[in-house]
Image (tube, rainbow, N blue to C red; front, top):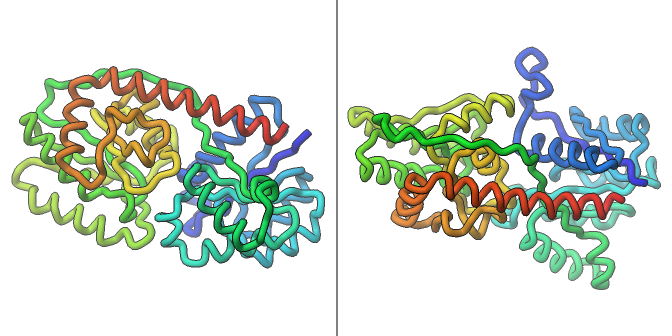
Length: 350
């Protein structure tokens, strides 16, 4: 029987005074926790640890003695895996890749490291998106001259899981403003600025003031110009009553409470593999506008072209008019997706 150990790297700005263990919550942390809890619920021995750096991995492996050590994201240098494979020859090292290729293109040496990982015995790459799975299999099969069987064994599909705890709510259409949440780390591929313009157009058309909510506590991958433009746009609109509301990054339970305060959620992003933020909004009964080609569980009828503000405005009207239909359809689709995920994971580790 498998014995699984999830390993995450502690955030660079960690401070024991201001950050609790939960306070480190990011999409990556939440994703791993959801997986770990799901495996435990399915009778698989699984554990999760957050370490300061890759030099602390060895100790956790001696303490826990896993059959599979899952490294969440690409943060361990290939040379370290060579050492770890020698010290722990019975462990299968599973490196989970959480990004599509457009996002990974901004990660410096990611593809170089990914290729080097495959030179090390007992390493497996786990991909959470079908397109990326196909692309990395092509890359690594070509590079390593693998057979189809070897390629499928060394580059596997392990999609994201989300806990199935869903709520309902009702939009208050009598208030003078509309609350639209466009949450997540500020990065160019998150498309915050165009979504803000679409939200503004929608608010004007329904005769309400816009309160556009973001949580810009994390600015990543050259995201500073995006947040600067966003702030400047709303400063110029200050006299109109439209507002940008920037929330601090917060622990998961508090973030879910914030999600529940929204009238509509927006995730019309350019690149996604799963989208936990959208799942959080839907779980709280908030209708969502997403991108059909990027969010695998999002219902296409309520998704929009992320390059077309007019299409996004159209879908915002639909979500505002039929919020319960949007929520029920997306919750059903997300539940269906995560049920399949649980079967894939339990099959692999059983």
